[in-house]
Length: 218
Image (tube, rainbow, N blue to C red; front, side):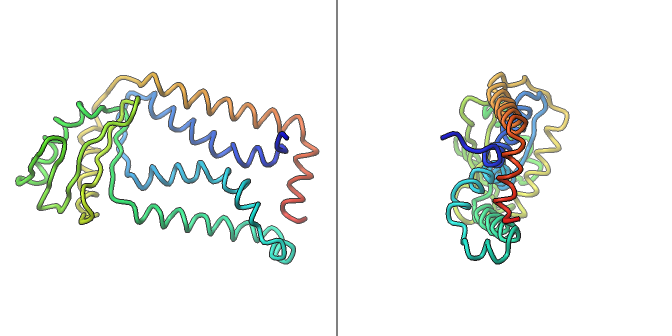
């Protein structure tokens, strides 16, 4: 059975925006440095609609919904936000560099770490910055022209990672790369989802309004 327009919009709307964002970033020629925490948080927001329209509504406490009305949805969203925040906080430090391959990143990173820590040591794709209390290794990201700096080991300094992020972002500020043609895939997928949600909502406006009132217990 095809879902009603409200649940379709809730489930696919945030996901469509996430795909659009990923596509536009990868089609840009400008490198972008972000943390793994922000990257995971963006994915969590993109999946929030699926969680909201799926398990969150499935396990909705009916008595609480009748008593509190639409407020119960705010409480559930706040709970989801807290769970997502907890997951992000316990993740190991990680930097995601868009539009720069692992091979391009290594020499640039070598120049950067010389400024940060004169005692920095390389071992293959692994790097140790003893004065910053940072240990990491470089990983490529699939078909995309992106790379990651992933923490190696549990003992890491978040201050050291923040310094590394700032210096690396500054070094990449004037760099230009080639747009990643694979970025067109998530971009087109996001546009397709938006078109589907918009068409379904416009074609079933009355059903959309009725479903919204029922969900909010109005």
